[in-house]
Length: 178
Image (tube, rainbow, N blue to C red):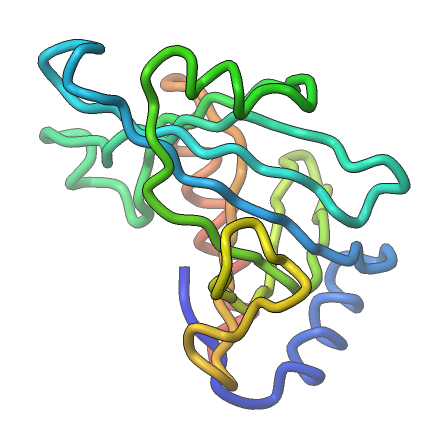
């Protein structure tokens, strides 16, 4: 993860050349929900993502775990987190409210992404993060940090493929370094 303060167009051209595929536009309405006190001893957080770039918006539920810890984690050059995603129906927000989850915050991520496929699928997204001034008002969203783009590089992995994935992601990120 990193940020770009300037030269977003140059980064886009570089990613286009590295990936060899057209960019994908990103416009994601993200709602962060936290569990209430009656849902267990440990609070949990989930994210509901609505892809507004689709002709019919699609919904995904995502849970991102904490960073991997221990001796193995200290030897890895990248941050490893467990992430679970699933496509869901459009009434998912009502479902989680009924379970006792509460809206913590919402944001709109706007930008572009690329998928790099060379044995390992690496996803790179470059987005601005915007906050809503009114509940669910995506058309009135304003940048949280104007002029700064968030750059995220991710790849799916399992415990037995960490070294291979870490090497691929680290190598790929070297191309992106200023």
